Length: 157
Image 1: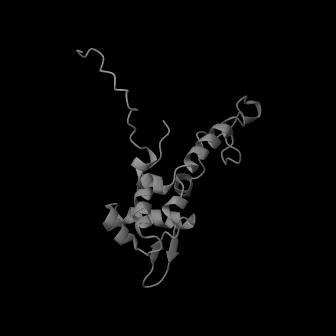
Image 2: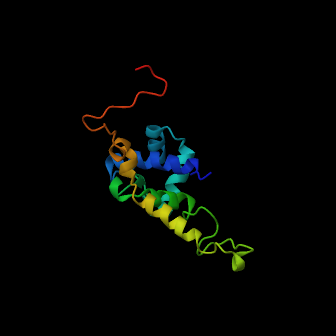
Image 3: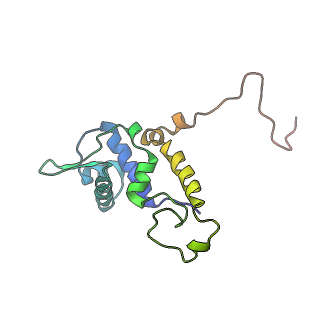
């Protein structure tokens, strides 16, 4: 099963809160309070995201972290890669640190990169703004006039 870890999910929650007021410096404690994510988790996330230049760290008495770009400029790819590393379904990717024992004779060598690139491209098309407005991303569609829904199987007409 392909699954993102819980920290990535929390990161989207924290970034979503920060996107409410782009450029505002907030502490980990304030973000934890407003999101319900525990302070140690928020602190860890902010450090990782600052290291990946997703958020900016501010030192000093009025220090903290800020998101200095709009939510529409932060892709889901940016978030995942900041917390989980390169997007890949398998270790069979160009530049992977783990080498495969059968790489030299593998008929799939290099083919997984196409799959990984397709997933990366799809995630590049989804932004933090989209995640904050799922109805805008996936609007409810109504059938065209004149068409009506089929009754459920076995329903009396």
